[in-house]
Image: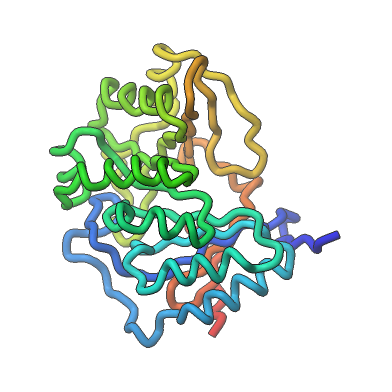
Amino acid sequence: MRPLLKDNYHRVLDYLRISVTDRCNFRCIYCLPPEGIPLSPKQDILTLEEIARVARVFLAMGGSKIRLTGGEPLMRKNIVGLVAELSRLPGLQTLGLTTNGYHLKKLAKPLREAGLEQVNVSLDSLAPSRFAKLTHCDQFERIWEAIEISLLAGLQVKINVVALKGITQEEVLGFANLAKHLPLEVRFIEFMPLCGTGWHPEWMIPLREIRRWIAQAYALEELPRGAQVAQSFSLKAGRGRIGFIASMSEPFCENCSRLRLTANGTLRPCLFSEEAVDLK
């Protein structure tokens, strides 16, 4: 029997999110201020070998799931090689990656061949003009093509939608329609004060409002949640699913199973905690 890694609250920690870079080519309004944030010197960023070593130790201690994040992880040189190395580690059950999708069109197939199983793509609007306003990147079609190519490559695809005040009921139902017709999961995420943007209550829309809009149009069937961050639902006669991550209005801390490794080697138990361990 494999060991279980537990914290002081007796939660099983089996999921490690690894930031491979703090760089990003987008300037999403809810994540980064327009002027950006101070970046770590390149010499302070973990090498690919160090990342693989931490992952190996985590899996040996009882972990089973790894997700690569950023910044934008596909900006990291030789990300495909890192995925290939991680995919071969003993004990790994799930390997995923979260991306803004800008470089995914050319990398989806190589990443899948290297062993990547899941990809989460941030797409906060189906309207190209609103997408550009939210991200400061006028490349909606490029991102959408990347999603289609990822599905064709055999990746499990989730679309992450940060729900901000101003999102319309019509657009919410447009996202739900994607889950009806495509084999993917659309996940609505509440705004959280991260990455130096601070708290903006005027941006906040509780996900119960989004859920109510969708339930009026589609028959939803709740799926078992376990330690998942999203409460997911299947759609009657639909091919995909819809999930809700209500971190602010419906926190799920008691079931959290995640550790987070920053790009410069700091291990954090929680996005909102000041506690951290410098692995270097």
